[in-house]
Amino acid sequence: MMYTTGRRVRFSLFGTSHGPNVGCVLEGIPKGMPVDEVRIAEDMELRRPKKGIGTPRRETDKVVIRQGVRNGMTDGTPVLMTIDNADTDGSKYLKFAKTPRPGHADLPALVRFPGYDIRGGGQFSGRLTAPVVAAGSIAKQFIGRSGIEVSAFSRSIGGITDREERSITDAAGSRAYATRACTGELDAAMEKSIISASSDGDSVGGVVECITKGLPIGFGGIWFEALDTEIAGAVFSIPACKGVEFGKGFSLAGMHGSESNDPFFSDNGIKCATNNMGGILGGMSNGAPMVFRAVFKPTPSIAKPQRTVDIEKMEDAEVSAEGRHDPCIVPRAVSVVEAVTALVLADQMVRDQERIS
Ligand SMILES: Cc1cc2nc3c(=O)[nH]c(=O)nc-3n(C[C@H](O)[C@H](O)[C@H](O)COP(=O)(O)O)c2cc1C
Image (tube, rainbow, N blue to C red):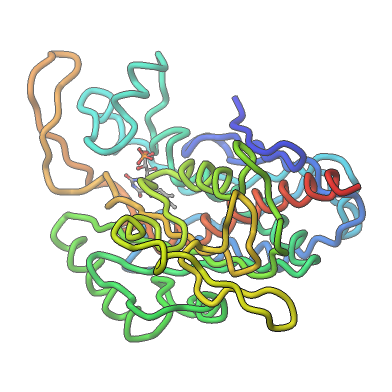
């Protein structure tokens, strides 16, 4: 089965954590777009686990473009990409079929799908985000041709919060740091927090912030095609995401309209004096950068024993996950958030062009 999103630029994902490979099909990118495979490899590198703060599972993450790109250009047919799963060890997962991990998808998956292959978390594994990043890289290249740029960074990890207002340049600068923090100081503090939880057999969560520049006023759709609706849906599809807010988000609840409205002013066009709305009005861009945040929960698989149920005996039991896991999902989720955002924007862009013409 494939998992599909998008209307004109359609993205379909397939594979499982411990199957032969994971992959995707990307349809609707117009013919003749140059595809830079070096940039795809760079984006894949950013998603890879970093030593000490990521899973010890080692994958080369080499993206094989099987069709849809010829002589470095899209040929107008669907782009099919696969990435091999090489470093698999399913033995540590078998006990979860009897004693499901709290916080992971084991329990609903075992009930819903008879014969579910639980190794590596099956289709619910973070491994499926590898093809998302590969396709997202092509989508970034496509929207980049129209001057649209997307960059994300770690706003908080394990209780360490970046309190500065950040620009898209700051966000792009986070690529230099393993935790995807914006500065070396924050990176060190976030890393310390991850290592401290992990050495205690535990995990931490945090917040990814994503900034998009270059959207013209009016870009987007309304109601179910609204920009924020589609972005939120795509970001919520990333495993472990538990919340998305645009602009000031939940803190708007405590403001007056006179504080929350972003006043307009004229300066070579219409500009917003503040960006409390995260760049969106009525589901369309108001010309300010689109800014949203997504919260990722602490990694569910932890070495600390937790209460569960032995589903064969129907008795209370304990389970611990000593296998190979990310003690924090946030640093790797940053690339995935950028990727799904670019995929939605590419799809919206093709629809926008159709609406105009
Ligand atoms: C990049 C990435 C890596 C992940 N790594 C792990 C991991 O090592 N161990 C784990 O238990 N969950 C990991 N997850 C989270 C699970 O896949 C997710 O929590 C699970 O499928 C349940 O889905 P839900 O949290 O959205 O309800 C990862 C998620 C992402 C996005």
